[in-house]
Amino acid sequence: MLGPAVDEDVTGYELDRDVRGELDSLTKGHAEFVAQHLVMTARLFDDDPELAYQHAAAARRRAGRVGLVREAIALAAYRTGRYAEALTEFRALRRITGSSDHWPMMADCERGLGRPHKAIEMAGADEVRRLDPAGRIEMRIVAAGARRDLGQLDAALVTLQVPELVGSNRPEAARLRYAYADTLLAAGRENEAIDWFRRAAQADRDGLTDAVERLAELDGISYADLETDQTDDQS
Image (cartoon, rainbow, N blue to C red; front, side, top):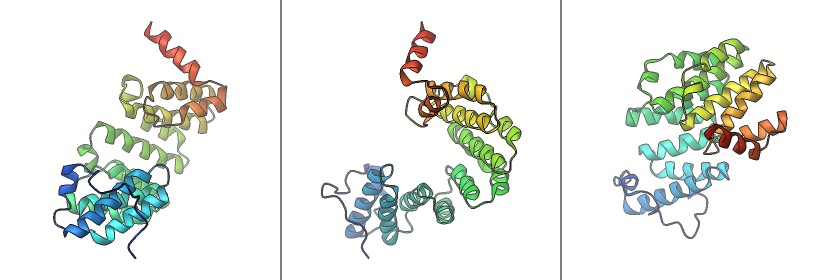
C-alpha cells in the first residue's frame, strides 16, 4: 500500500531545507515520497485530520526512524483521537530526539485513555521544568482537565490560577483563560465564566479557541462588542 493520493502541485520541496535535511538518510525516492506525504499531512491537518493521518501513516511506513516523521504521525493520531497510538509515537519520538516538548500532549493522551491520575502524576514530573512557558501552561491546562475528569472542580480552578491567567498577553494566555472559564461554567459559576470567556476572546488574536462562540451562546456577546471593549481599553 503506497498511501493516499498526493495533490498534483505537491513536490515535497515545500518543506524547509532544514526539515528536508532530516530525510537525508533515506534514498532519493523514499525521501521524495516521505516529503510529499508530510506536506499533505500539514496541508490537511485542520480541515481533514483523518486524511492527514493517512498521509502521516504512509510517511511512517517509509521512514519510521526519522524523528520528523514520528512527530507527524504522533500529532495526527492525537488530532484524530487515536490516543494509544499517539502515546506510542510520542514515546518513540522522545527516544529518537530526547525532547520533552510534547509532554503535555502525552499526558492528555493518558486522559483520553481514561487515566487522569496518570496525567496528574505527569504534571509533577521533572520533564515539566524543561518545557518552555507555553508548554508549562499547556501542562497546567491538561492537569486541570484531569482534575475535572475526577470531579475535582475546585482543584482544577486552583491549578489554573497562575500569574499568566491575568498578567500575560502571550497567545497561550487565551487558552489558559478559556480553560478557566470553561471550568467555572462546569462549577455552575456562569457570571464569572462569561467574564473569563470575554477575557479569553480578547486575548485570542490567533483564533486558538471558540471563546467568541461560547460568549454568543451564553450572553449574546458578539465579536463587534469585543472589538469595542478593546478599543475602550486602549483609549
